Amino acid sequence: MARKTTNRRSPYSKAKPKKSIFSKGVRFIMYAVLLLIFLGTIYHYRAGLAYYLGFKSGKVLEEDEVDKHLSDVRNIKVLENHKGKVIGIDVSEFQGEVDWDDVEILEEKYPVQFVFIRATAGNDRVDKQFKRNWEGAKENKIMRGAYHYYRPNENSIKQANLFIKTVKLQKGDLPPVLDIEKLPKNQSLDSLKKGLKRWLTKVEAHYQVRPIIYTGESYYGDFLKEEFGEYLFWIANYNFYREKIEDDWLFWQFTEKASLPGVEHRVDVNIYNGDLEQLQFITVE
Figure (cartoon, rainbow, N blue to C red):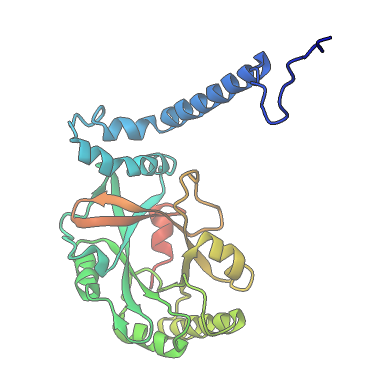
């Protein structure tokens, strides 16, 4: 008698999954949320987009110009959020030869009222454009300040001496600035902090004004905020989602990619956490 056979599915064969209504619904919701986020971002930055695409300014931009300026869309939003605050820039030899006669208005609307200029770096480096920038800012009545790029693995007193030898502050200039961005390679954090304090103490004794410390937001929070609480800070943070200055920041460097007449290369832009009268109050007497 012939035995009945049945078709059995191989254990290695896979059943074709059936898409449920539930999974389709979840996918639809995910796509909808992403679309809303995208549209929300466009709406949030509509003023900047309108400006750079020429809807506000009447300019017809070429495609490469659009690409160049789209990174500044956030800058427009940040500037709009800080009406009444003072706007400034910082420069070094990396900006090339600045035409100070043309450095006046940012984004056709915001006057540049102060500039920090790199003077020195480490214990032996004077910025190639410092003298030219220092004199150019003064001649064009832009409030100026000088900063030193600190190298953690070099002698702090020699670095302070180089800055003092290079920078002659005058009445109306901004306080000196110590720029610290790197962690040491061959020394402890305690040793780094001692070096920073030696630089700050020597420079303050010479100019009779307390220096400002420039650093990134993470560096500030992780290494400097507690032990250097008596100093005022200039903080760098270019995060796309940060649009307001913190109350405990004296200055905020919110972008390194701004376009400005008179400056060939992209330039850093800063916001002072106060009005012009308050900024003038902290200058050298």
